[in-house]
Image (cartoon, rainbow, N blue to C red; front, side, top):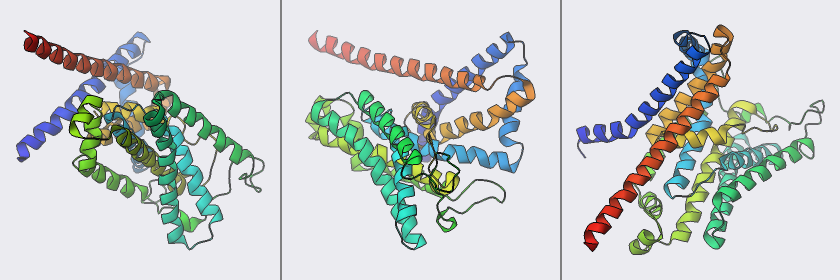
Length: 356
């Protein structure tokens, strides 16, 4: 494909997302004016909070890493028309298995880190794959099963940090013991939290770009067009559903591995936080495109990091960030619904012409 066509294709993938972000920011500005504040000062403070020094810039990448990894995983399921909303649970299982390997497997540092990575991927994959198997075998609604598995993972984590894995030297706090320093990812900035997991995220991004050009990626996307399309193409749709959910959950497990080895170094309650729900929005905003997802993840990390500074400097509550995120969701859903209606209208027109 010529370079010019590639640029046009990338622009077409990113431009709708930019329009939705601009619409959300403009709507947010209107709300700020209604509240009697200056929107320019508010957004200036938000940007200062994210970019005013090297530490804050590094924090935007710290937040973007898990969000991008989880959103890449979600995109695999969504392209297969499987609505995986349980990425937070798959993330949590990845963190649990990572810490178990680090605390209880008495191996040298390098093998421990590698095994921890593998276990985190497998744990997240099996947690997602279980929902995929239930969908393929019993046609169970994946929204319900992934949500329930998310809750189970959260309660399992709570049980472990309040019970058998509680740090005996942790003064009764619900947390595990910390992993050894030799098992932690190296820091990239002195005095900051940005770690070598950034390179893992970049590697995953490049692999995802290649993945969607592979035979398996093509089959996953094609199977998402419906059972009739799968049957005509000779694709085993049930098998593809399970594979898609395995890969989707596995990437969220890797996100959990990154957070354990790079940031937290131990288990604590609710490690996933709101990552799962934000990652869904990021995947949709990025149009399920690997590069678009990476850009969207960084945008959301800027909102998260800069939001606190905006509140401190201007008095505008951090909830404005939540409102902007919510507006983006509205725009994304509207665009998706319009796109789906356009496709259905096209096929109705073709069917009418054929019958006529």
